[in-house]
Amino acid sequence: MDRVLIVCDFQSKCAKAVEKAIDLAGQNSFLILLYVVDREYCREIGKRECKEKIKNLNKKSKETVRAIKEKGFKCRSIIRTGELLSEITKESKRLRCTFIIIEYSGAFSRGSIEEISDEIVNSTSLPVMAIS
Image (cartoon, rainbow, N blue to C red):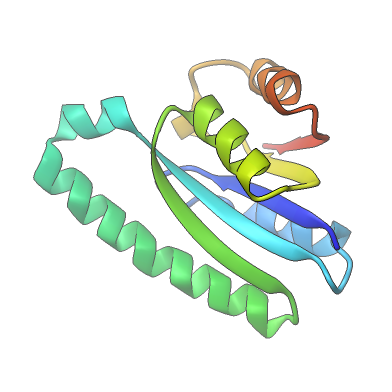
């Protein structure tokens, strides 16, 4: 069974990545949505606002998971606060993922799509597909 890690930004933008994962995944695949909320961003906006954003993100992620399950896939979502690369590496290992799909957006603007993909490949040794 394939275990596909779909990396979403804290604004819950990952519709293209989810579509691609569904297109590529076999029927017995397990799709895992990973939302990474940047710790520095939370410091900037304040604890209360960050908690509110995470609460809204949790609600949106449940809707996305429900829609994926309706298409016959196993799916769950995880929300983590931390540094993007570190969380992707940690969760992909912990969950024994076989593939990573990341949708490049403004939230991940700390580098080019190629740089981020290379960093993920180098830190996990898993195949990575980046979608913009």
